[in-house]
Length: 324
Image (cartoon, rainbow, N blue to C red; front, side, top):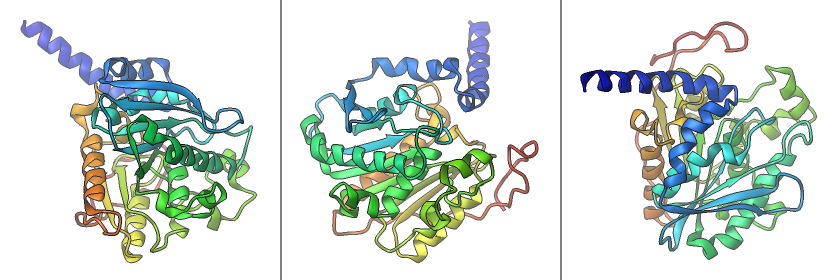
């Protein structure tokens, strides 16, 4: 019996150590581990619903059993705007549904088929679809939250901060009750060539979220790993300060020991005991909804400062990062 317990712990530790690297390389094994338990959740998955006529403009909806007038979360995955599918992130939909929310996972067009801002326009169309149809599936169209990881969090940030995208599809900022960013590049720079191809034709004032902050922005939850060697944690700290200075309600959570993929993989059932992402997301959504449409929710103290990282993952081996 003791031997089996020890073996089980070794397997769990091996999975925890391996999954972030495998996810970063789009490993089928990693997604299989994360998604396997998601097939057994207490929800109904309605797959491949079209929100537009163009390629990849489709979404999956995860409806909790018995859902009625529930907050709705639209989620976009990361992948440096060049890769990823909604099917790989079934565990996200299952986690949000298990928390009682109607979850929408949307695909969007990718480079090289498109460049900025086409994929943000896709995001706006997905939000419009949610606004028009989520009530048919137990969701509340007045309580739509948008959420993303990495490139998907950048997409969510632009929708939350730049009203032009929603206005193009007949909406405005009131459509978004709040937004949640996991490992987001708030101060995006052209540090790898592909980003210049994707964003280079436009000024950074259009695609750097930190330059788009205003008092009209909806409440925000910023989640970032202190060991993120792809996007510096200080970007979350800077962004948190900018939002607070503008009077925007913001909750900021920095996770010790978490890398770039840690905040999103922590939503999967195998990894959930080792992370706080779902707990913090639930708290943010529930506090925001409870505050009412015309009131601002109140959150905890701002992010603590972090040490500057001197190198990036693609330049040199990553260095450990901790509280300042």
